[in-house]
Length: 455
Image (cartoon, rainbow, N blue to C red; front, side, top):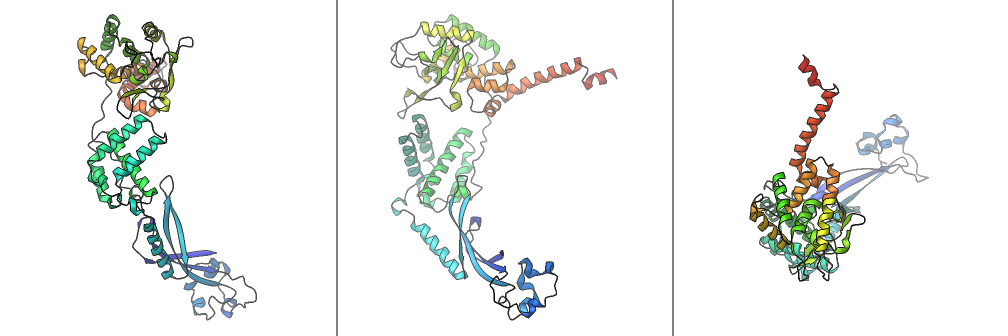
């Protein structure tokens, strides 16, 4: 069987061709026995390979067949016409529409079915929830995800902060059914002046709310799935370069820390020599240190609970952040210092106050700022604890450590993160490598520049 078709009538046209009625004509050879072949078909002198009817296409264009009184009623060939239209019943995980087809003998019947389906879709809408806003839906989903263990306390707090930030936009506070594409485009336009991180959080929250509204039949269509212009904008804020300490400032920092009696000297130096984040260092337990096998097991981080207070989490920032840090001779000195000053505490934390309570990342950062200000290191009080990690990674790149090793030591999720953040440092290292390559080529007589110098 073969089919041909053309749009017969266009209704109110929608995206993805939903709601358009097509006329379809089927041309096929009859297989019923006992029906005689008409004289026109018997006497047809058109070569078999060139017959339109045999190709099952455009049979109505053949004048001989059209003028035949038995057209479509003989054994040789028959034809019939029907009408069809498609409508969307849902979407795949990748956002592609899932369609169903209506097929009827007449156009009127197809149109009637389309209208019934449209009314049926609208009937799915829960009138009790029809006044729900994107804000309501976001809060409901965030709470459900937290209650079911899908997100932890830190993610819960991040989502709540994002919702609070979005409340200042009017579209976020009106019934989701009344939100228009124009409102969303205006919202996305305003986002470009924010940082990439904030833009990502804001847009993802709005997307999730619309996906939930669509799944709950509060809206007929998800605008983010049918309008390609609704995409995450790029920030106009220049990306900050990684600020690492110079070699001289690093030397001065290490010297002053070793001579000073500051209580947080070991956590500060550990970040510099192990690349651990402040939260990872403060969440270390005594049992995480394995001096026999020379590794530190990083399995959790300091985080903030729903109430905003610091607490020891049960996992690291990302799955790749969970790692074993090798204990080098320098790191072993620091670990032994920590073990000598260890204070018994309920959590068995390697670092804590004299009363056994955990340090906070904020307190550690403030202590580091005051120390740099006191000894006039780098920018003084305007430094931040995370610069220690940046400095350690920068030194590794400068001495030629392969990027994949740097990625593993830093606990980055993928290598592109390492390469994007430390692009400038890597570029400088590449220049040094290129000079070394040129020197090696010249020594082996493979460089073209040698020939130019001789000439």
